[in-house]
Length: 368
Image (cartoon, rainbow, N blue to C red; front, side):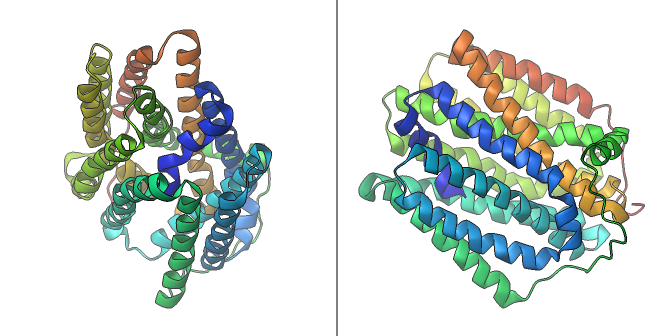
């Protein structure tokens, strides 16, 4: 995924020639994912998570091959919609597999390992993508992505990892009932909001900052250097913060991370030097390291275990709800004001996230 995310906004810009349209198309894919997280709940409850995970890896590999050969914007959008649906199934099933194969006392640690391992890919992906894209063109990136999906499928099948078989006596397909049920739990709502903060941040970092870099005349290689640097603090610190969360309390970690992000964004509003500006954004990844894996671990500690499929699927809509919000929020700022003002308004948003974080209650992984 990191290979295609590196060049995605630049790739869409080649078709649209508009920053705002890039944001809107990306928001469309996110909206499809959002609906899929809720509408696919009955499908996920009825089917084996391990088998679904393998099928999505295979089909996503096929979709990326199609991306490499298409030259039509409309076909690109159609494939993107299909990928968005498959991505939802992949995220849901993988999260359940990790939870099923973890003891309660090891859950936070295992979440940290999963996110750290994932971030290794996000670290080297931008460098690989920029190297091959500049020499062989963007289509080769989609072929490489397809190869890695098939490699992941083979590795997973070889390791014979599975998930516990859950018996669902009555599959709940009520769209609004599922949503109401989840959002009637106050702490789950707060977890949902705090877990959305990284999606707002990454939407900004992966969609709009690369366009800003290109518009400054810095070239695609600088996009790769920036994204590499932005992932490095997350890779280095996420596991540490996740294991620290229980000791210093989750809400303190969440609040501190959001305050750090807000403060750096506020400072960026006043910065004129492009290199120092990018440095400040990279430092913001330290705050993200405090939020990502820890917020998911907090969800598993607060959600009723018997309803984990339903709640986890709805919980994961936070990725897309706040992903859409982040993209549209910044697109609106650029359309009405300018890119610079996005730093100021995003800072206000992250201060609000921090306020919510400090109001969360504590949980114990031993008592969950």
